[in-house]
Structure formats: C-alpha cells, structure tokens
Length: 314
Image (cartoon, one colour):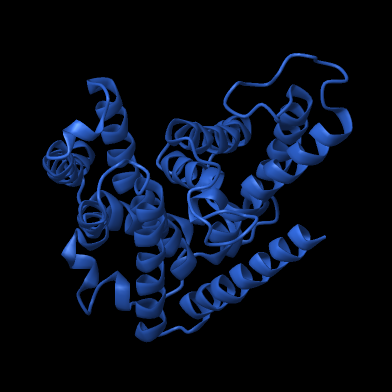
C-alpha cells in the first residue's frame, strides 16, 4: 500500500509538471508560449541525457560537460530562432508544413546525410576526448567502447527526440498526442495481456533482456497497438478533417500499422538493455516507483522518431 501511494504521488507530480507545459506550449499562441515550451523541453532533455549517462563511470564534471553537448542538437540550425522563423510563429500548421518545418529544424538542410553528420561528428569527437582521459576506469577496451557508444547514443538521440516532441507540441497537437497514445496502449495492453494469458499458451520467455515480458503479452499489445495506429493515423483521411490529417498516403499508413507496435516494444527493450549493461533498475529516482524521465519515455522516443521518418515516405 505504501509503495502504491508513492507511485500515485509520482504520477500526480509528473502530471502537474507536464500538463501545464504542454498546454502553454500549444494554447498560449504567441512567442512567449513558444519560448516557455522550448526552454522546458530543453531542460527536460538535458536532465534525461544526464540521468542516462551518469552511470558510465565518468566523474560528475565530465558528464556535465557531455550533457552540455545536447545544446548542439537544440541550437542548430540558428535560423529557426530568428524573429521571422518558426520559433516565434503563431501559425497553426497542417501536416505538409510540419514536414517542412521538421526538415528545417531537425535536418538542417536538404542534404540529409551532411546535416546529420555535423552534430554527430561534433558530439562523437568531444565525448571521446572527454571519456578517454578516464580510460583506466574500465576493465577492458570493450567496456570502454560500450560505455562510449551508449553515451554517444544518449547525447544525440535523446535531445533529437525531445526537440521533435516540442515541435509537434507547439504546432500539431494531434500528432503530439498520437506520439503518446500509441506506446501507452502498447505498454498497457501488453501488461494486462501478459497478466491474463502469460505463459499459458507459449511457455518460452519473450526475451532475456526483460524476463517478465511474455509472448502472449507482446502479441496482445501488437494487435491493439496496430488497431489504434490505424485509427489515429487514418482518421484524418477517413473523416476528411485536415486538423487531424497525419499520413497522406497508403504506403505510410501500411508501414506505420505494421511496424509502430513493434518499434514501441523495441524502444522499451532497448532502454532495458542499457539498464542491464549499467546494472541498474532505473535511470534515476526522480519519480519514486516510476524511475526517471527515460524510464517513462523509452518506447515513446523510438516511436516518435519512427513516425517522423515515415512522414518522409512518398
């Protein structure tokens, strides 16, 4: 009972913090709402990066320095922060405009490969230089390499995800809610499916990374996740409502329905794998009973970035 109270308090705290940020970012339709939203998501991404990499055996100062590299992802390109560009715009957008904004704000220019290599190269070099100074903390070269790669991934992927989440929160609230609802449904139906049917049909464990997960739970979560994905992503076309129009062709919808539930599960498992490698239960104790930021956003992060990528399929 005491543990339940602790978890409920954590949920209440999480809602009290996040709901005002979401509402202000979208409904305070002026430059101040955008700035408040951008700063809030930036702080959230900085904390999420730090809580993830703090287990890499580096000292506090080194990990603070690595976390600050998150700003490379956020502040490039500088053009989106000019007064006549996206950050100060009060316009509501349709999905075609969202794609163009995302291309500019996240991919920097039309040359996608080049634009992605710039921040990756900057962060990779600086993280290597910072971590190699404490190489002796690692028993083997492989352990150093593993910690280095996890740190690189966290420092690039996590701020990219939160910047993407902010863009959709600020411009296309339906898309933002879709990012949240699909992985939440996959996680919830998987839990109840596993609780009711787990190991009654398939005796084998689902995977070693997360021993409590079952095949039955995974199958139930996939079915419900696929159905919800179809409804949320096809509703705009089905009812001819531009405000909730998401994917614009059948190829996008087919790929999304087939893959998004799996990607949501993979996101959960991938961050569970990182925690196993770090030999920890949660990334932090920010929310007692629920863990840290990335304990809550693990599957959401993978799914959001995947939806963003599917949007570019013609």
